[in-house]
Length: 85
Image (cartoon, rainbow, N blue to C red; front, side, top):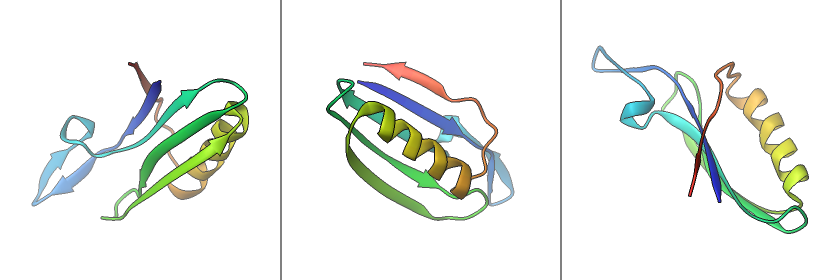
């Protein structure tokens, strides 16, 4: 399993918070190249909206789909931080 998190700054009651407080979008992958699963959620920049997702397919197709959705919905330029479990 590998999990990528994309942290982003936000404000809550006038206080700046970030990924250390859980403000992030993430994607976790498991399986193998041909048969993988992905789970995660998107958090829109500047909005209090979270949308969860789950998918199954080839690792490459799943990663490409997540990349397109991430760019389209969040417009992030942040570099992902990976954690392996």
